Image 1: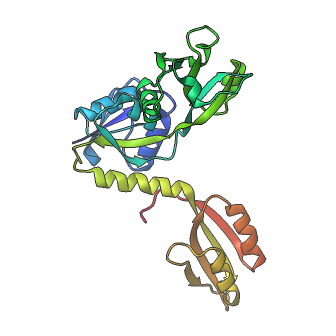
Image 2: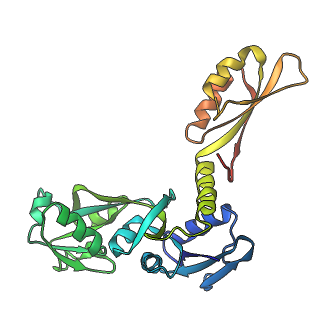
Length: 280
């Protein structure tokens, strides 16, 4: 059986299970369950701490895993990214006391607190910088105020937590992270291609919707130019003479504006439907 690690808690856990469910795999009902066997798909799921997943996969104990790109790089495990999954997006940034201008060169010889020392060490090394890294498991933004560090490197979403701690973001983005599927460097397990196809289908489905509408045949070229679909729209004749029914896959983003434009060129009975999964 294919052995796959899934985050057991944290921001990636629920989204990962939802994506796997949408891809046709069983997932646990009880958050206390550590293992789930999906006999139908010949997969065993192991629910582990997100930070440990790259280690298990890199050691070959498990075949595949879902974790964050930041956690993979920080672990320095013998594992590689297979597929970005499109959720759990974050940015890893530097921050230091507000009120003065900082740049990367100012970090030389300074103390920098972080929960990702491996990732940060590699980043600084590539730029010829040397700093003393202070490894903290959480609440990194408090390190400067408490005198433990001169600056921090941490995951940033809105930046409001940093501002409340009297810190300001500076320098380039260290890493743009998101949830990813990983495998061991030297192993491409049987079943990987099918899993990737299924997950890719879910990702595409979340980015697209189906649009259906009726239109007079004379106006079809203008409407088809607005919503061409992938290989072209599906067109079927209606009982009403001179009219046809049209279906096309279109990007989810901006679909309300597309409906307005289709209406303007003569489309009527316009419907938009979510897509749960697909194969393109």
